[in-house]
Length: 243
Image (cartoon, rainbow, N blue to C red; front, top):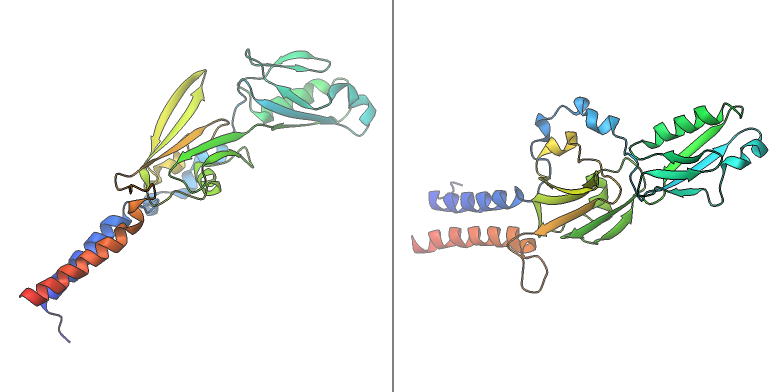
């Protein structure tokens, strides 16, 4: 059956309107152009210790008695305003700017001068990220890993609502005592190789609403694809009826 040319035009309009809507919400639209093997930022990332961090440090060894002096109760240390922690036996240690691995290695090397085969485990105890705006469950979340990405964090918050701007996600981060804001377009794959792909402790993510938000507070963009399709169908029918 041959489709009337005017009906075909109406269907084409419907398709174009729906396509325009999907381009606003689909993530990583150019991901086929990205060489995933060269994402060194993903593989090499390690967060650095900052002021006000809470660091858990446990020292163990085959002989538990000899490492007892190196373990506080509780074994949690707060990084002070000058970037130091007060560690047993050694006193104040400068830890700001180190990774957990660097801190563990230094402690292991230093303690091994007096203790045979010590094992040092260091971890962040307050690795939190705040997620606000157009996500399903905004709030402050404790990150499960020191290698948490912005995608994992948004997933914990239930993902963006359809009323959230995918092309203008705001990341607020404290760097050297100053707050910096970065705008991220989740529709583009360059975020995968960005230094902001992985989150730092106390980062804030804010998802702004689109301009098509309803008066009630729910997102009007939820019905945009439906409206677009319906409008195209109406146009198609009008073309047939009046011509």
